[in-house]
Length: 258
Image 1 (cartoon, one colour):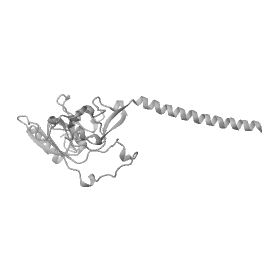
Image 2 (cartoon, helix red, strand yellow):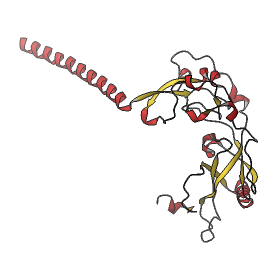
Image 3 (cartoon, one colour):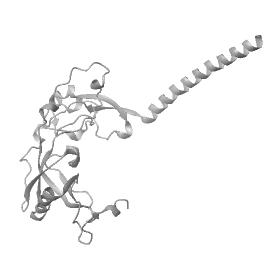
Image 4 (cartoon, rainbow, N blue to C red):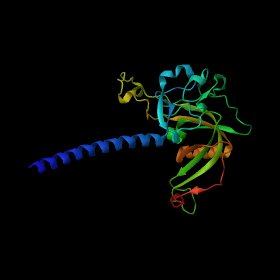
């Protein structure tokens, strides 16, 4: 009888010790995981900030958030202290990290009409959704690559095949206009309680509303853009003037995995 009691007590003790060891190991694993991520404090946009907003007025629209160092660009800001006197160069959307390039001196803020159209070029406008415009993160003066996709007719030898091509290189952006948000999207949220999801600065909201882009291109490229706007689809890339060009290439289904 005593041996049974002793065996039972020993088993219970071993079970308790096992639980403690597992708990201790789990805590150590969490700490090791955090250390491996090397978290860094960065400023994250938590509420929409329109272009031209002074840094001094951004305090309530940004918050410090820890993110893995591997996901932090070199120009990420950790405080607004060194950016006094600057303004937002573009519309800032919730969820993005605040980087130095997004803040400029007021006199450097580019608006519609600031960009001079080079001699010999003409301006043409077209409307796209944010995901087709580098997430809406374009400002006048930058250059874009214009991809045109057609479901049929892109290649004479294969008229029934889908095709995509980077058709226009380094088109100069002269104006960017964003459609106003619908009234339903501007309904105020109730004041969030501490710890609620609404109070979390890690907002993943996406930009809404279409954008009207105006670019300066040749007459031939303008015709291509108008045709694509009418009968095909357009996608843009941010293509600085020093970006490499590896020659024209039409992408079909058979080319995607090569």
